[in-house]
Length: 127
Image (tube, rainbow, N blue to C red; front, side, top):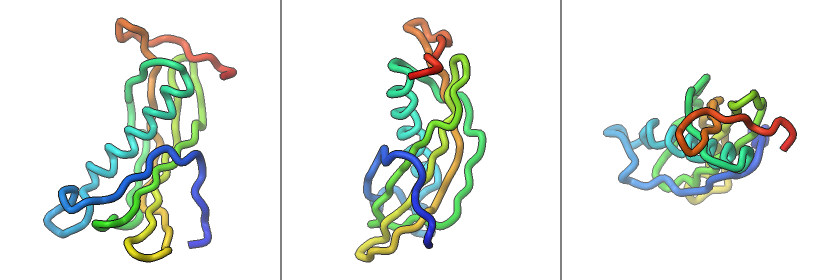
């Protein structure tokens, strides 16, 4: 695949046997949790405080992830609203014992900045 990842490398981890389905592929929920964690990290860094995930606007699984694949999650903030941040997330893998690198999943998640009482708070539009 000639395409390259977009965004900043936010998480890098390895897919393990405990994360598989009965078919031997990595469970989509585990993959989604890695994406949500990476998006949350990017949102916290952008707004300088607590955030909550409010939506998974889109998500597409392109290829399966296998045990031993090195998972690389990239984040890119595509839009900042009054209190929300829309973050595009791409997941790429480096296949086990090879140099093959391919995109396996992508999506867009929305996070909202919150205060100490759990209420939405403004995000600096310039930061």
